[in-house]
Length: 548
Image 1 (cartoon, rainbow, N blue to C red):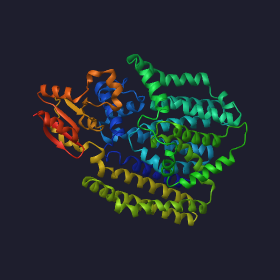
Image 2 (image 1 turned 120 degrees about the vertical axis):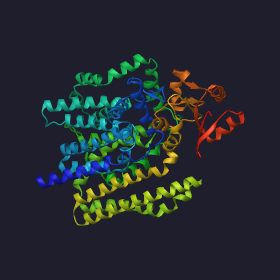
Image 3 (image 1 turned 135 degrees about the vertical axis):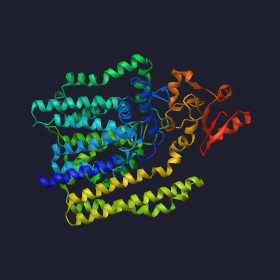
């Protein structure tokens, strides 16, 4: 690679870093996930207990602690901010781009690796989830590192030491994937390798895995926390391993059930603007990797991984859009290889139908306010429409520019322009969230009531729990007549909960000072009872009162 070209790639990397990390602080936290995953690490820092995760001072065993630890470390080093709460998903998302770039170059060539990274970073779902505080980006990165380690460790042309090191890297990565989101960090790669071995009729990959030493390394990464948390909390095993894994996968009544076809529109929209290229890639890969041979077939394994992830979560009783994320890096690797092979004219026709997306957005945006049911929502939707229009214009400009460049046979530059415009458009769409923050975040509530939140005043959350409020106030609440996802923690420590409003009324009467948040429809009940309450905040959702 020429010196000038290397310099251009460094400038491109710097530009992507600025775009990727530049807006992390701007947006208010979104409920429920961003509030929850910002608050748990905050409570770790306050309590000093980094073994037992707690949400609102109640035991919370839904997920392992790796992201909590990373975020708590960021809080300790840099303070509790929006950007530090989102830093881990953003870092692992960006690291995923570099990893796919590296893996693509090693497996399929320099051009394929560059295209793979650009495709991944600009695919809509990956770009969005990389800037939202959920656990899915972290587990996606470590799963990807695990399968990349497996692929590079199975290459016949590599020497024994190189293969061994890559496979140890894979084992360590899978351990970190388990600490990120549970047993799927091991189950998914193992199942994909089983399917691959059956289809290939070849057990050679298993012989190269260094199973004994690899499993020891895996346990060295994962076992210490599990041992410590089970020693401190005997109830952890049943809750985490049985309920959070088997029950949530097999049960439809946990609030996340969706039909089998739920992920179809998620995948179609999530891979924009490369959706048609995705179908072309999957079709070609399927046709070209049907042979059975002794050499490890990286393309076939990646294809199996993509299909298995999609099917696995489609049959699950619990579904969320971000569950598809682990298939995206593998898809990008296959698509990068395909993109390096096709001619400019083919890609031009694949991008042309995508023009409908920004065009329809521009046509629909002026009418979004008509979907609102309240004056507040009319204002919010109208304000957000401005952001949507700007994002659509950036997207449209990038697509048209890319198509013009393709017509001039400048494929690399065209892909870069389309990718950057899509990433910028996604950032604009996300940044526009602040126009609806009054509905999706408690930031405005916290700012209004902060002067009343003294260190010694008890805080109550009656019939509700606003996920982002504890983070903004740096305080936990005593729940009243509300359990939801904290039911398990309440069952373990019932003294931290008030079961009904009648009991709450008695406690409120005895308090010299207190503060409570409740849904607006609950307040008349307490007013009718004659409880001493002074309203200090009110909107269409919540009322906050103090004991006068």
